[in-house]
Length: 466
Image 1: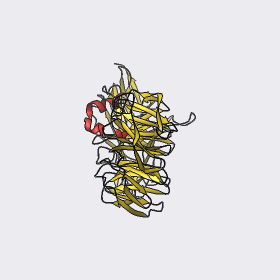
Image 2: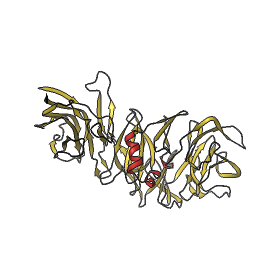
Image 3: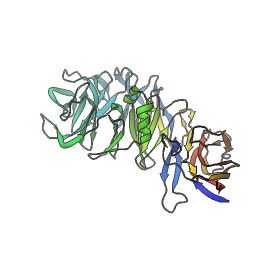
Image 4: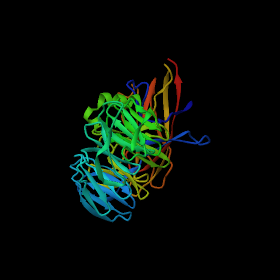
């Protein structure tokens, strides 16, 4: 009787030809183990969204941390929250149901609404930028003592006076130089300005000149623009965005690289409407030693790139097509998220296994098992899994196994097994008499409120010729 291990999937990668690859990680991510570990890879739950604070009844449209407060746009109103959870209403921003972009200079936050208005937020109130020279803005960042905003439907970007978001001049602007693009978005990265056009991207650097405080870097031109302005996000590694070529890009320094897979690009091109693609939004966060870039295509799917392992997985809130967070802000040593579903704030928690009050479904589709043109007889299969209970978990949590012998088009009936009672952290889960095949894909699913760690799926059987 042969004994072999079925490879764990490292990522979601479902090709056109599912006989080649149909692997999937839904609400699970991979972590590489050290050389002397029992297994080379382990799979872990993604974090749940634990309720933190109710702000209001309307959607959360923006979050920004300027020490020592977290600033929240909830519907049309701006709130200030301290670390102990005390909340104060600051004023009305007239956001109009659109996401609000924000940047700060240490004492002022400049918020740009979907209508193109600019508002200065301080710890004591909210005021409209009154300058006649402030443009109809679409995005904002901060660089070298100045706020910088992009003008809607043009190639221009404007800058404020030093350390003053209320000060704007008629001549304080520049235009993308290399191509006649409309500017889609802007981001400060390592002291430089990244100006994302709809066809190209330019990199400008501080010039130390009051009349022209920024100048384009000579070779700072990328021949790819940005398709979805809200997809632009950065972390300590660099800048991420959904490009005009419908590929996901990452730039470290001035070197851009494609990080999306053919699978993702096929879906972006063929499966999603162009309006949903243009409305895609992204954010980054760090947790458990991993740096994540979260990209959501509204009404379709949430993809997550793990910069630590350089692979993608999926996230989804049960009952939705996407993962529920719309925006994220690191504050008070927490990753705090807001959603378009309600006026509540949530905290990402690796030891909370729900999104709000909804159980998180974990699904794994393994790479194909095959033995060239020979038949495989599957006598017994067992799962190497560790579970940890929560206070409100199901009394008898279960795991499901199903399989497909035609590349994931049709699946077997579901075979459920118990994961163990409370306190039974380690249990061997076994399935028997699984039949025979020439090629097979296995799928696991856990839907109960438990912490799941998977390090192996093993099979006992034999290979038969013919």
